Image 1 (tube, rainbow, N blue to C red):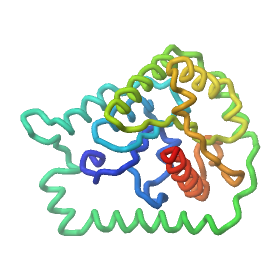
Image 2: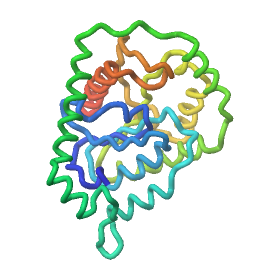
Image 3: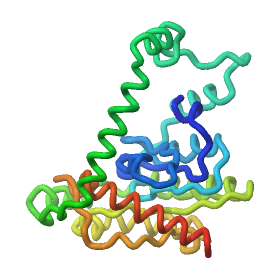
Image 4: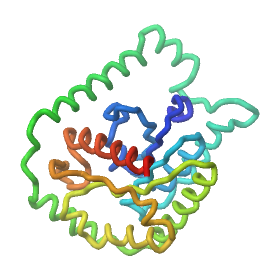
Length: 249
């Protein structure tokens, strides 16, 4: 619902919690980030195509989650409500709107979000944390490789290819993105399966795969998958540079 009410942006980001970590406030030109933590990137991308944009970036690290068709149906009702009546929830009810205006709740939330983004940007001036190659990351790598090979991976890859084709048929551009993960996780067979599935499903995979120079200062939370606060700011800047470079080419 926030996405439906957001201002148009030239770039929309779709994916999972890995990409969700990159707040739009970290970018110099604010994108719309419709990445959905805990969900399939297919659902995120399917929702993202509801609004026009020049560029869509789809994170493809995690393809073994089935799409949330219920969430997608809700999204369609939000964008094309039955009988023209918008979807109702407390978040956008008349009562909520009155209370929000009375106590300036939305303004206060925006200020908190901006303050958090400012604090994160200040971290860039500090040195990166020491690389973590401890037991937690090693265990996470083992757990990833133990996840069963699922037909969902190939299905997701074909669905993302169809979404990319449809979006580009409008004259827009789609890029696939592999979010940086701890080297122990990035080298797992689990991650290789996703890349192989996308390459098999999409003849344009190499053309659409976005090349990003992530540098060597990125660090992760203990799970080795999600970037820490400082790294999220750096990654947002690096991603933005890569998108601009790809557009020029």
